[in-house]
Image 1: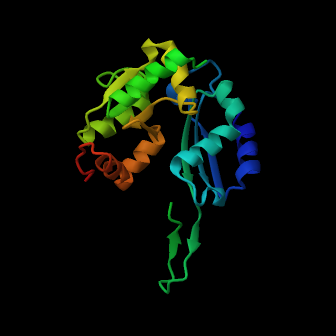
Image 2: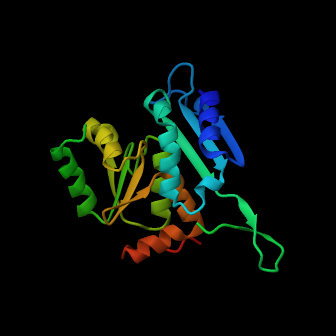
Image 3: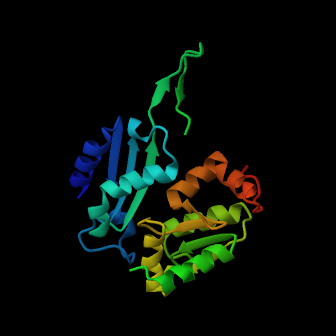
Length: 100
Length: 113
């Protein structure tokens, strides 16, 4: 499951960074948990694909790519979605973040 | 399936209350960590809200996902508008945007500080 998610997210967003963590063990005994785990995931991803999108839009983009998994056994999907830091020509010589 | 009756029920909840949280469990006894986080944030900001326990109502539990095309619970609505789930609410709380958004919509909220 984790490998499928990484493959789909990589193909869809060409992320600068991507981490997918299976946190199912933390939810053992919870109503959405199943034997064998793979039900609760945390995704942290930085991608230029999110530039200019709202938080809700970013989540919707990711939820759409992982729709099959959400309809299958993935019960919880925690998302931290960011845009890459880019150098800004303002003389400060510091990296700044895109505005959301 | 989100039939017309169910949509109207959700419309009434969302439209009839300034701040509505569709959650698992109740504000006093959340039964899911993600729902508990949103309750904590709202309580911290002193925001009055109505909690709707989707575990008590399977129709709402499925219907609310279709209502906003959002696959997970919790879901927060302010003045009829979908704001987001746990991650979004937490991020907005941390940046102060949540208080700002609530105030803009005429909902009292303490500064995050």
